[in-house]
Amino acid sequence: MSDQTPTFNFLVFPYRDQYFLDTYGCIVRDLQIIESLRRHPQVRGLTVVNRPVHVLERVLRRRVLSHGQNGELDGLRYWDRTSYNPSAPLAWDEWKRRCYGRYLEEIRQFAGFDPTAKNVLLDFNPIAAVTYDVFADYFKWYDLIDNFEKHNRYSPWQKARVAEKYRYVAEHADLITGVTDAALQRFPAGKKCTLHNKLLDRASPHNATPDYLYGFTGFVTDKFDVDFIRSLATGDGKRVAIYGEVLDSAVGEALSKIPGVQLFGRFRQADTARIHATFAVGLIPYRRDRSHDESPLKLYSYLDHGRPVVSLQDYEVESDYIHVVDRENISALHEFVAQYSMDLARAPGETIEAIRAEIGDRHSWHSALTGLLETVL
Image (cartoon, rainbow, N blue to C red; front, side):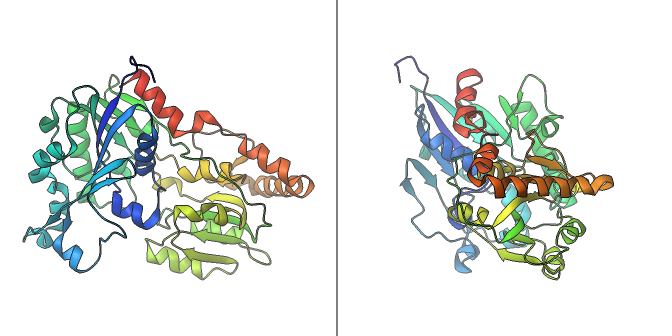
C-alpha cells in the first residue's frame, strides 16, 4: 500500500453485535461487513460497540460470551458495558432505544480519533439512537440491513421508532447505503447508494450425495409460505430440510407436522458447507406480502455451494440456475428441478462449478467495500 493510499479508522454500532456473533457466527450483513473491514488493508482501526447489557441479562445468562468482552480481539476492539439502570426492566424497548446515550462520550474516547486517517462512524441500528453530534468530526455512514419500516417481525411501535431513526439519518448522515433500491426509496438522492448483499468467503462445497431434494438455511419466521413448503414435500422420502432457529413457534409447529419435512434447528456459520451438502436445491420460500425490500444472503450462499435456487420472488441476481415460481405454471418448477437433477447425474462436478461460476469477485464484500472506500468515502 503506497503512502498516498487513504486509510480509515472505523467506529461501528452494529445491529447484531458480538453476542450474536458468538452464538451464530458471521452469518448476517452487518457482521459480514465488519469482518470484511477487519481484513481490509486500508482499515487501520476498527472498534465495535456492543449494545450495553443490563445486569439482569447477565444474571439470567441471556447475554453471555464464550470469551472475554473487552480489549483487542482478532484485529478489532470491542466496547462492552453492563448497565445497572433500575428502570430498564419496566420499559425494555425504550431503554434499548436510548441505551447508548450516556456512554457516547466514553465510546468516543475508547475508540480514539486518528488524525492521520479518515474516521468513519458506521451505524446499522434501525431503532437505537446514536447522536451523531458527538462525532461531528467523523464521516457518518448509515446502512439499512433491511427496510425495517416493513419488517414482518416489528410491532407498530417499533416501526414508528424506525421511521424516526430514518428521518434523523436522512438529515444527519453523510452516506446512506441500503440492501436494495427499494429500501432506499425514501432517502435523499445525493446521499444514498445501493449496496446489495455479497459473499464474505468462497465456499468449499462437499461432494456428498444429498439426502434431501430441497433445503433452507436461515431463521424460520412468519415470512415462510407454509403451503408452498407443503406442496414441495409431496412425494416419497426426505423432501425438505430446514436449518435455522424457529422464531415464530406457530410456523415451526406447522412445518413440523408436514410429512417429508425435517427441522434441524439452530446452526453456526462453521456448519454451512456440511449443511448445504445435505440438499440439492436451495429454497427462498418467502411470502411476497411480507417482503421488506430485502436481499437474502442465502441466495449467494446457495449458488456459491453449487445449489440452484427456487424462490417465490425476484431478487437482484439473474441466473439460469434461479427459478422464480409462477403459481399459474407450477410445471415449470418441476421441469427446472428435473433438468438440474439430470445435469447433476450426468456431470456432477461440472454442474456444481457451472452454478458457482454465476457469482465471482464482483459479488464479494471485499470488492464492494474497496470500491466504496475509493469512490464514496
